Length: 323
Image (tube, rainbow, N blue to C red; front, side):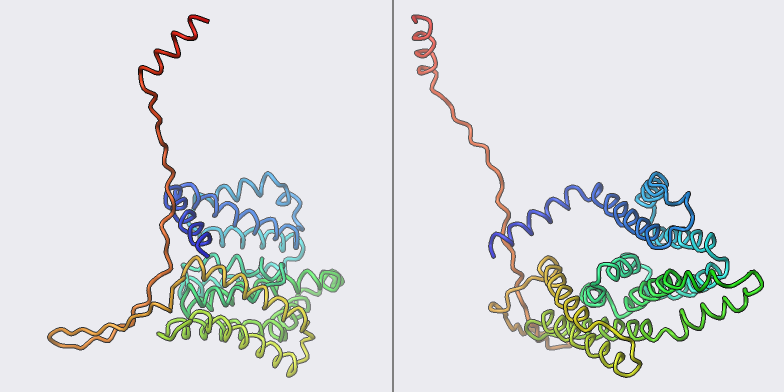
């Protein structure tokens, strides 16, 4: 445990010294992975599939505010969909505008949640995002997680229904729009269940981890995971969404492990040394519960200089000269 604490302190120290370089690199990697994923799933416009274009856009995002990464990703997505079907692009544009209004109104600082949620869906561990945002975010973070979820399911539906959408003729634009809206959005029960489950999980985890009880963060993680699993299973039972129970359980277990790693770096305390403090001022009595953090000083490298006596140096020189 001590070695892990030392490692954490070293990483924090390294980040503090190199934050000016780490921040743009992290923004570049996030944008690069997001754009690659978009090109892989809906890469209908060949010019945007060029790795050089992806690198240039990711490099541009590394110097811009994080929210611009969301805008760039949305623009690339719309360009691909327009190349495939104008009707798909129109529906996606309307959804993006609505989500942007909600996102910039309630959770404009949760850019990473909007981008990482679809990525986690592709990795089969989407349940990590509501847990993580409940721990480090606010209840409004449910909007960012929900936005990423809606975008994933909408694009997934368009990709899976490509053959059906291509079957419509040029005069069937209205029917195509109706098909996308009805089946991709309004009748997508799996999407609504996921959004509802994630929203409840974010709020429940946030409320519990703010409590003054011992091991509040661990209790919040376990409770949030169980709530999410129950909501997904209940939704499957109610609407026959054909969710993979094994995938749900395995994804939830992996998500819990990942979130516990996040907890170690963000909130690591020693409840065995908890103190209850009471004091007062002219107007109030205060009852404070103080829980010390688990910290350890990172070892510093020391360079020890060994000084050889001058007589010994002169003696060595004479012996060398005589030889």
